[in-house]
Image (cartoon, rainbow, N blue to C red):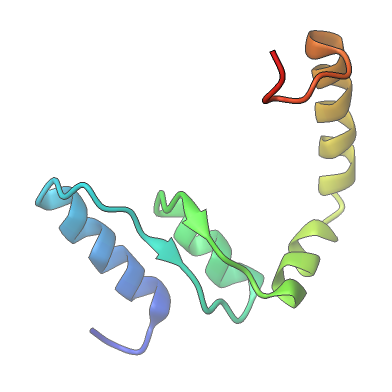
Amino acid sequence: MNGNGVEVVADLQLLLDQNQLPAKILAASFKNTQQAMEVMKLGIEAITLPTDVAAQMFAHPAVAPAVEQFDKDWKEAFGDKLSFES
């Protein structure tokens, strides 16, 4: 393993895939949004983010319109129900 966290995650995911191991990676220790995006592109399904990195991602101009559209679509499909309500 080297000091490049994204490459380490890629190598670990490759080993899991090649050996069909029933494990998942929870990636962490991100220093910037680029690192987080790179591991998500690798197919990593779970990440933890420092609050400053998460804030940078949520500040992207595409986020607010996407959230508004999701909210509109949700209300059209489900009204005011939450996902866990039947």
